[in-house]
Image (cartoon, rainbow, N blue to C red):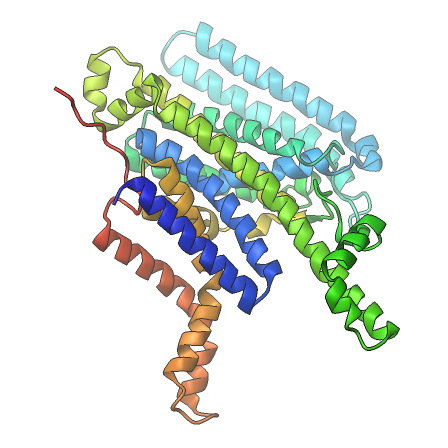
Length: 458
């Protein structure tokens, strides 16, 4: 079976599964799963660019996703004038001192001769600079975090349309990837994995603890949307007219005017939510298609072939005059941009920034499973993996509950064994992830949609 046929079959199965969820659970849930499947597919695509193209083992996916979420908050949240009025001078002073310290370190590195004197000079500048920065930074932070802490306690953002944050999230992730790449890309693969994991944890720790920037564990809620609000749709004459036209038969069958009004109210509530999720799906799907087409073009270009040659044999590529570290930095940044975009989209649909929600299990383990199951090195495979894994991650509990009910049907109600099995159905989630990964590795070791290997025509 060709990759195209496999992909078509898998997408057909996914469509059927989402339809089953819609019919037997709710269409709102089905569309919510679809939206997060799309976001997961984008994130998986970013990791595939790094690993599938160049063999870079990035375990810091969570950090880049969190930077995307931070970008959404900074772009969309309105500024807090009171906090700025109290803390702007201290923050400006901090920036000036920081630039001066970094400049002094660069000057010392370049102009002081090699040896102990250079090392001691740089260490002395760094230590003195640290205390100077804290001396001007800490008072400013106290003033900012003390301003209406229950409602504000942070600087806020720029108050711009949140859809702009998707691009800004990519840029913020790119900047972090450039810095990480400059430090860590020369390391061996296992050391690179540890370095990226450690740096991502630093990013999360900063977001959790720097209340002046992100409100920390108090979260930033109420982020604006790029799509309509349900309450606005429910009072819209146009939307109401469309609902009346679609469900005219059902409304006409109502017993009386009171029943008809109640039915109309329930229909407006349900389908306003469905319409909002369809709008999100349209936006997210458009971004996914654009990123997929760009990724395919890059993969099939001379640059993509060069990256795969470097991945397969770095020594030979270096012998041919290729700048391996430079190319690795390029692909590392590109993959981080895609993950950052997905992180901003996820915060957009959540409507809030929750630093404590960035857990390694969700943003690292799951994304890597998506890439492996879908097919490393194949962009379409990464997207399919994102859809499959996220769907079963969400639906594992209902499926587990159904399985346990079937297994224990012969046991009496009130049985300790039956109650224990049913109450632990949620634990089927990790079992199901392991089972999917095991089956794919057994019957399709290169993933559901393996990487296409060009055959020689000699």
